Image (tube, rainbow, N blue to C red; front, side, top):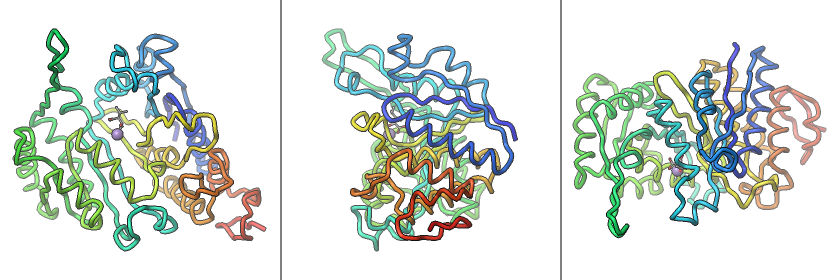
Length: 372
Ligand code: IPM
Ligand code: MN
């Protein structure tokens, strides 16, 4: 298969982790005979610096005309700490989501066996958890009208949803549930919000066309508690934009590090793949950021194009890296491995290279390659 991929490495650790994701994809290309052609483009704070615009038109046009977008991270403390800033890196990401029509953000949560002790949550609680969040991504309070009075002392953000916006992601969530454990939990605040009541109505109606899938409801405050109290109860969580944003960061605690969580943002014609972590400016250039979330986002890209064998190989390589402790310091505080080591291990594993020997911690046997 030939794929043209727009690469928006962005800010902070974005470029470092994206480099490792490209290495993994290239290894897959070599082993499975695919051609991935990348085109880099500016986005985020770096784009503001160079062009004044967090999403330059050239970048947007490229993304509209590629098979997929591989995205790193955006954000810079310079803007976070300046409430007066007129232009922000995040505006670029939001506009990109909107322009590409990426209405569904899919975030799988599943702890690795080798990392059950890395989570601050008890092993008995997180063991066996396996759920996917379907977060609506182009509506709600993120995109509603913003108002400020003249004095700037009273402001508002409108939260608006249409039936159509709810319905398209709901179908996606139910279809995914059919291939999983057949349960959808709608998370909302229907005891207070009109938008949530519309979500309930639309989702209930749609659920009738998926009789094999069980539907239940949770208020978001309760859901926030249930996710860390009993995460095994969830299969597919369906929710609106802001709740999904918050719950997915919370859920990352189950896996031990936000540096492990990948996501796919899908629309009808476009697809973007990104780690859920941010630009982690404190770690920039230090070779300590965890590249696994980016590498797993690349695996989600492969799956999106039905390259399931290939994606499986990436998952297997990541599992091996974790199993043999070739991980960054977020997962093992005394680890001697950096971002590029983890990336090398994973791509070398995919390539079945003998020089996995470099990672000889304990005379281990890794897949077909023997580490001496
Ligand atoms: C995410 C991020 C973004 C969001 C920010 C950077 C705008 O937190 O992808 O979860 O809130 O959607
Ligand atoms: Mn977020």
